[in-house]
Length: 545
Image (cartoon, rainbow, N blue to C red):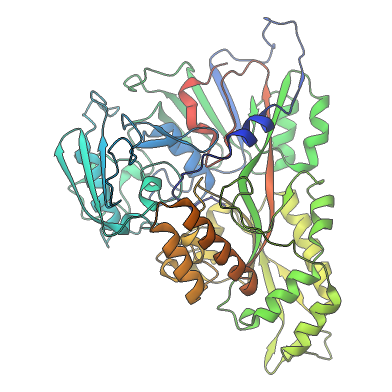
């Protein structure tokens, strides 16, 4: 999934993890140093991606492809570096209390913008564009995916074209995240093109944007590719690639085949079934690191079969998660205990999930479920028949779902697998956000800050956000809100420990694993550094081949 669901990043403690993981690489060069691979096309980088964006306006896009492509097309107030630290983009510095960008009471943020930045059509990019974006986000006529973080802004002003002053309703770490990329971090949009529209839901810009970032969109061949060329007006100077091709290859077998035949130069997040075979491909190097992408089994708590925590916990105990990780994911990923990145300063101390089918049966019996003549558990008029949904085109999804299905069947839980393309599964009108699902097997990508209100606080139940479990718990609501209202890290750490303990008591989802991302790339590729957070496009203007 897109990732899709998270904003804010204040993490500084993962740098050592990232550097160490990046050191774990293997190389199998096919030619002498200084000699190009014969399949390399000088200046043309071909990315093999299994998704395409569902929109080119990040306000409306819900998948990770939208996050990544936004990093090519747009400049943000802030960006993340490869390890999740804030770095300036349009801003001249990252605002902080120390440099005066954040007031002592935490309720005012002042941003100073670079001068001389222009849109690809030559119009100046100024504070007015960010102000328009803020008003567009808060415009109730716009069907934005989330207003999380934007809704704590009391007012915003631009005393001059290069200064933004944001006044908050209360101190909130969320706001730095909305200034960066990914999740609710939307880039400034061009006021000179969009400000006259009553809403921008169907604006041509959403599929044919002008650019403020390093690349221009040359063509979008839906279902096949997106082609980008350098933005000659980019404020850092035009990138060195003459063409960047985002090849859409939903099938992982085809994607790996194209890596073998050198039809693609970069294959990020290599499917676990192919990692061991990477050593046999000439002319590529492999980089790996633990990344802030967590896989989980999510529950729709609105469904009557899943409303009682005993059913959700029984499912957690009846599935052998270690076996799924060892067999389907070849043991490459790190088993999770929460949705907070294990390298974070806020990572909670929690026990691993236990595998106990006998206790799972006890829980179901205690909740009043009885096996019927059809072999399925029933409680009154309700049968314990559930659908399980994931994205299509992923062998690991299919294999995991079949194992989950087979492990739940002996308990009398019938599971029907029903998968969708990512752009349908996570569309605002799709099964997840409309609540027309029972269980989902999916990934999310975190921002670098541990703030997870958007997933669990009742204020963000769709259509207001991404709490697609429909969880409404007073303890989770209070702790998640309090943790974003203070800049005191020690206080926040205690709050997140309490929140994660409560989530384990409620089981709105089962946290399965953190991904170890293996990226395979042509040995002629330079400066492509996989990121732990959000998207690898964090430094796309530096890429070369």
